[in-house]
Image 1 (tube, rainbow, N blue to C red):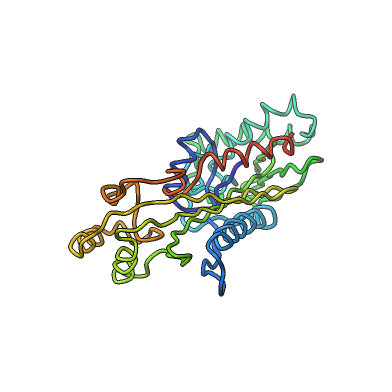
Image 2 (tube, helix red, strand yellow; image 1 turned 135 degrees about the vertical axis):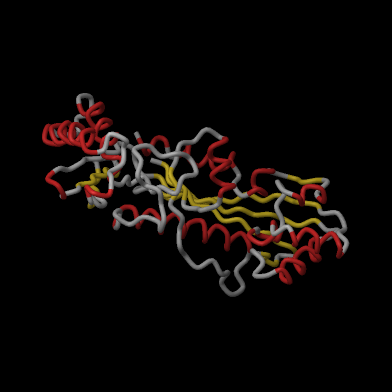
Length: 300
């Protein structure tokens, strides 16, 4: 099970474009650089800390989920805010999947198989649309996890109200992907602007110069952690104060490292890059793919 430890819609879009199935569980960690921390160390540290924080949360406190997450579904869509730990509405689909896998999976006990069959029947009767109605007052299940012999993380959700329960089992190892992107100029880190004035200062610094965009990437599993980074040189045309002000007025720079988006309106000012374009957007897909492929032997 692949989990993206980022709320960035751009990273979700890129992973989806590359054909990956995943769920989203944003990491909540401080993102300030340490004193005298160089840009590469900074982004790789944050990427690793994000991935490790989410991995720990999902394995140690799996019942937790992001505020406002729409988890009342049996399947997860790329870019959705689901943690992959499905709440009550997913009971029917989760149980059906377990029933499908049980006959061929020696790790599924006969007891689990029987429970899954019962959960499937009852969830269909109580929630034919896939989600419970308020009068049932089922609430969210409690969640427990166990590990398989090869580091697999198994998820089981049990709801005890109204005398029925559901079981969810994911036979795939948990893999958490973390990433962090920053813009650097003269080895100084340009993060997300705090306000329009900060955005204007950053854009004036970038105007007429070539800077670098660096993304740190980390992949964390129960047995292994891989960390790497990608760097791309980006050339900017000279910008007038009027152009900077008009761009800031669109709001686009305010949640972007370096106060611009290469895939947005700022594209008109970027005549040349050297390196991975997707790295500048926020996720170097080729590097991510290589890291995930390197973990394949560990997941078998």
